[in-house]
Length: 264
Image (cartoon, rainbow, N blue to C red; front, side, top):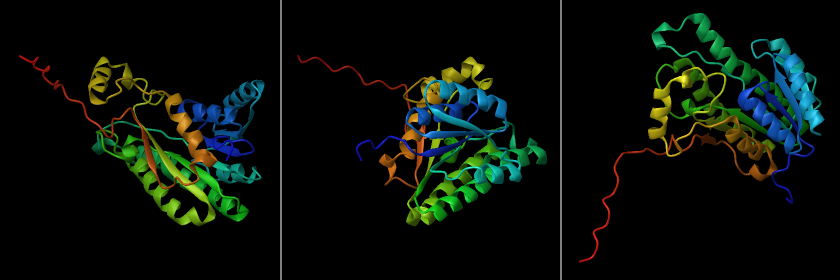
């Protein structure tokens, strides 16, 4: 592989490409040479993004997709002759005590973060298998795919399920040369959490909770998605990979070793 991280001649469907992590992944994949299909509910916004990409010499086109509407899932997949890379980014969240979630809130989060993604992945996976040319599926999970924090119960259920889906599809579809992986972003500033991170106490807590004290950005996540979409990751599958400044694997403490005693 002369260029193992190139996405040239690959078609990438990025679901949730209108903002945040999805938009950054779409931009980085376009820069790596992919034909990027930008999927979300807001086609007008996607068209502006696609025009921007094309003005910079990249390949991009908008596709309407609403994960709560099965008809748009089918029409989206049917409209594409083939899909080499599927990136499932779309998600929503409601933070509150578990006992206070309403059935409507529960169903909204489940449909957007899990059920719609499952239906889309079934359809895209079937198309990849029938084509016989392999493929890449990249799920965007969360730290909640790996651990627990309060007031995120329903969101955490969906992201934990995506981790399980990743592992089982990797096992089932490996024979078709389809690699399935999951990225678990840590504390990344997006529209979903911007208000919460206005609180100074949150930044003070984070600076002591992980070795890299800053918040992450969408551009910290996107390069890993490019790698997982490329031939460079052909032997990587079934993995849940955290991009979290070390939060999930390390801990900080205030202890400092005593200075060495100078020789007598």
